[in-house]
Image (tube, rainbow, N blue to C red):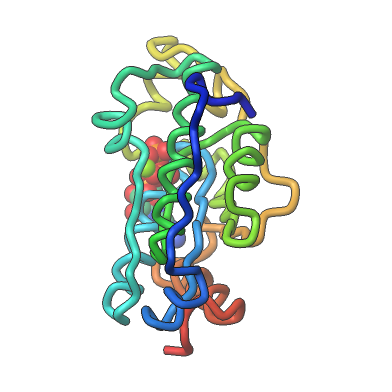
Length: 203
Ligand SMILES: Nc1ncnc2c1ncn2[C@@H]1O[C@H](COP(=O)(O)OP(=O)(O)OP(=O)(O)O)[C@@H](O)[C@H]1O
Ligand SMILES: [Mg+2]
């Protein structure tokens, strides 16, 4: 990982450790990293899980692809280097949320294994990779933003799954086939995982 540009930096640790935070909040922080093709269901599923968590009193928050690209990452495009920097910044922001005790959900295509591995390395104990995987055919048939149609027509270059690679996770903590499962059943699968792993109490 690249070193900071500035020198003479000192890390100031806080006084509240992760265990104390978890005890006070009643849940253990995690980064749920949703990855998958456009149209696979990352935004839909992460929002469904976020709602269910917040309804249970769990501090949860979604960082979503387009929203972050409209703000924090407005200076970045879709070239490989920009995609890498996009994910690097998201990883750093997600780590801050995890430090704060939040269950943070990230909803980015994040097509490159190395980028996801770098995000994982920032918070190995808290990282939950969720492969949202209905398969290309289903994602393309959904085409909620009309992007596949434009990519097939050659109007969008470097479109993941069509003219740019998607490197599927080799050992995600969770794989959700959103082609076979309803939105509710998909969200339940994620919630069950969080319960089993002790991130949230049984609800
Ligand atoms: N089980 C499911 N989980 C999630 N989405 C589903 C499911 N079943 C059907 N869908 C539908 O699939 C579509 C998924 O679109 P969504 O915008 O969530 O994809 P995305 O992965 O966020 O894409 P992008 O990378 O372009 O932002 C929605 O229209 C949603 O209603
Ligand atoms: Mg989305």
